[in-house]
Length: 336
Image (cartoon, rainbow, N blue to C red; front, top):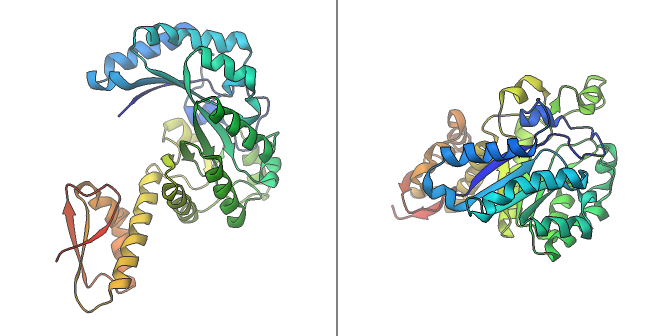
């Protein structure tokens, strides 16, 4: 597994304050601006703490702000701080996040010179109405152009999505998913929208103008999206925000759970098991095989999946077996 060394630059470079955004609470960074020497200290600290084998695949990740919208002098300060580690091969790559409207040829030229390998675009939605109501300041055509430019220059492309923003319906979410698949990113992150203190979304929520997704609905929609991305070979590298004390203190409403990603994986395994059991009928016991490490995910929190199967009358003829060689988060029919 690669070692990702995170450097948070919350809100830096952002030309807009989007309705949903409170990056300082999301990242847990509320202090002074991160300077170049602090970047180097962070890298040294992470390298010293990690296991030797993980240092062979280390990358520095600038998160939180819109990197390419920073003044060029500020970009150079941050990128230059990583270069000695690249030269000494202590770090192999740089990744960063930015806005779709912060991508153009000169910006990509600069990143290429400083050996940036991965660019994550904060896309959030590909529905123009949702983008407008969220105060993004660009439209879906900008997203498509940015993705095309990033891929054409040979960078790895990541896309971040926020299901549940104002104005979004499941129909528009399906269209967004289809559009993102067409952009052919290397990976996707899915962060269902949360109502955080000191955000425009919080004001709208308190005024009665916004209702966030329930946790169950957010899990169901994220599971639907992940299944489509998986089918196209697009890796979903994260689902739900990283839990932090600052985030939990700032949370007002919305589908937050500290193990959100596990809830999604559990839901997907339930759907697979239900289909296999329903197809087999009830004439004879059916053995379902899962990875040895997936037993708790298969059962679900508080055995929720087992309770669902019981209510459907499908648990009576199920025999569950684990296999150390089974691919994680998969279910297959095995010999009885």
